[in-house]
Image (cartoon, rainbow, N blue to C red; front, side):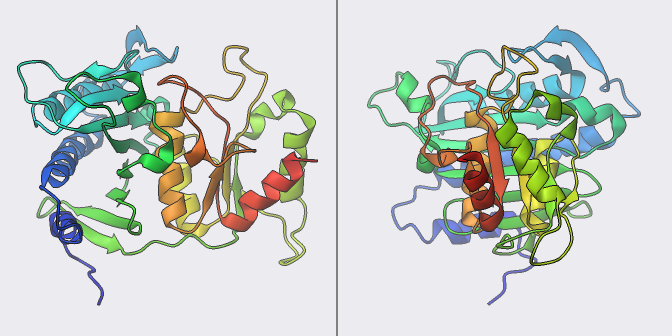
Length: 335
């Protein structure tokens, strides 16, 4: 029976009932994150009318200029999630170190890893942006958070998802039991189920990559893009190139329409030989989502979900999307 139109809270509770030993802590955690996303969505919608566009003048741990809305989203999520009593630590794309929960608050067993505002360099151009999140359970005993608690491979994620802010605000998430999408209905302030059990096409007709970096790619990567720009034997047409420059937006399109998104390694910046995407807060959560939808994600050699992180801001190449398209890329890269 279709659950189309049910609220995300109702959906979370229905998922909770599938686990008789559930305490409700996870539902509380995700519900509070949803509140934060609603606030970010509202601020993003009025950003052209308030003093929240532009740069703060700071540089974050990734070496990137910090946008005002970036800083707002990061601070909001940290503040709202710290007091819940469900988390023992957080990791943010904007923060250099592990964020531990202040001693004045009760601690739980969950770890939240997030990118507060993916695609923020496009904010001023009114391009879709988003919040990516990943949730793990602590693996060591006691209250103290160890590095192994945070540096877990993606297959251990309890949940992952993203909020997409654009013409409408969407939430796409999975707890390992399918992938579902919800659209924020402003009139009632609720996320309503709009995309039930999302499945990515086995093969697509769109590839997404920043072709402006092609001079910095090795020959194997160039062979990949050459493949997609030639006529597909099955369809008689080349793949269409679509690249927004906002990971969450490019991924969302790929998820719904099929095809592949790529961010290969390049020689443009010696400090980032594996590309710019972060394993823990970007690649791993999206890899969980695409797998739940029947797709694949790899760094060119390994399943993204199998990679053991070495540090919280580790970067990896990413090839993600329809199964046949990702397998084709892996075959070409092995030549």
